[in-house]
Length: 481
Ligand code: C2O
Ligand code: CU
Image: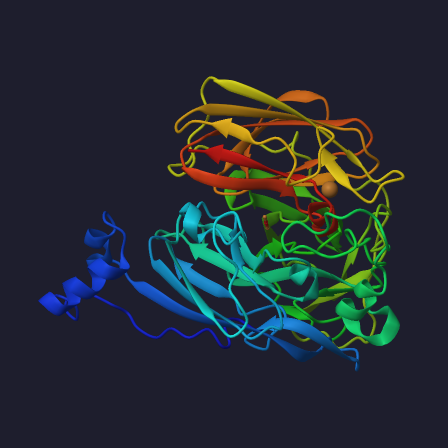
């Protein structure tokens, strides 16, 4: 684990240090009105992220050129306590523009990092300072929201720890699941550029215009956890430990069904929000989703972490391993027998919490048909390609319901910026109630529904978290102004 290696905590501002008039003036410049009072009693955590191209070693002896934060892939873990002010200076040393999005955190609109929607992109050589309050607690991620940069390595985990610990663990790991296209020898960048389908329309990628139409998905041929291939960096545990795993999927195009051989997993949170503990044998996790699970280490050995499903190129792929301390055997154990219990939104039950209130009643319903992929390089919402897709015009405080039906052959993890929502229907069943920010709409006439309160003003993007679908138009704007 490369936990927070180059995260720089420069200063803790506290009341004593900044109680003078100079301090007050300084803070009033930095904080929006309303936060000033809190700023005296709460810590500011300053972080520097420098985006640049670097050589990375995935642990298989091959070197790749990846786009990195602080030279690392994934980027440094950002870990704060609930209520702290995060001030993140993003320096752009890339050859193109960039922005950073704090995926899942309901930040103020201006801080949301969507180019041309919430901010002007950060030009090469320039720095942009993001600042927001870290709340509610949970497992999040940050990533570039510009062009295809997410698929080139620009992502990392963002953990907001609760003020009061809900439950203590003997050990904690963050597992970031990553898909790679390494063919053509040049890493994700070169292999993707080699796969542009020429002459398909004028519009191009939405987050940064790509000339010549959207890129086709590359063929992924390598999967890693925390930037390391299977065997390169096992997760160590001791017998008897209760281990918390925060599993994060910033992959561009892979839904995993992850199994840790020899161990059931107890799901405790999805997208940072608590659920009633639910035991599974394998964890299905789409792009943009996060799950916190508990693993009880009571089965000593060396165990594979692998993908069990055959609905992606990652089928059967070994991603990593869990190794008990003191185990000498050379072999890893793999198991995949019998029927495995897998999470499904319909099985999970959300918990009451102080942060995200249940939605009571509905003011407006929007129905969205997701399609594309067949005979066309574009992916659409209600037949339209972003930015020509219809806006969703809502008003502050309204209670909104989205209903999706998926007329395409691929599942789409739909993500709404700036809000948590309640999943209220999935796979044909209503009565589901879990809080999330990303919902997988199953393929082949799959159906899903969510509800949220428009409590965060601004213009927010809502899109499929398959990066190639996003770039090919599967997005629209939710205008809460
Ligand atoms: Cu993970 Cu629009 O973002
Ligand atoms: Cu999609």
